Length: 184
Image (cartoon, rainbow, N blue to C red):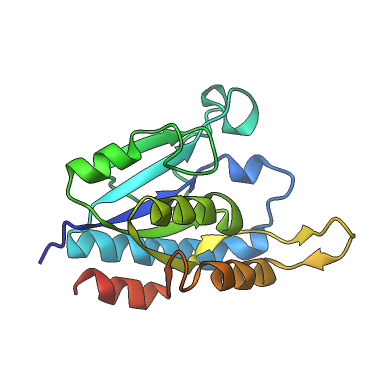
């Protein structure tokens, strides 16, 4: 059974990230497993998948780098590919047009980084009228230092992201909940 009013947005799951100095491999295996399960669940349910790549003029996120490709070993068959140049996948792209042309009003968001492009895309999508599901365990981020020097772990950042999105901009789902929701 296909629910074409829904789409899965796979945000910035690309080979650019392992080239960055903040990349932390310790968080990647669980992310890969959760994200692949979510992608497979969407494909099985007939949910169109939108693959989004972040592209910059220079560096690891440039086309010249050769890194604007799916992060290995993720396997994905997108219905469309969107290239973005800002944190939100909606800013300056054709994403909103594509979604409207395809009758989609509900989004499920996963990808890299939890508190940056995934959160920003979630907020923007909600602000322009989409119902948004945010699948935290299929997002990836890394430990960061606060300006005061204190450490915020990736789990703390994800917890904060869920806190600010829940009930305002998105419904927070686990991978299994999101997959079950695809069939509703």
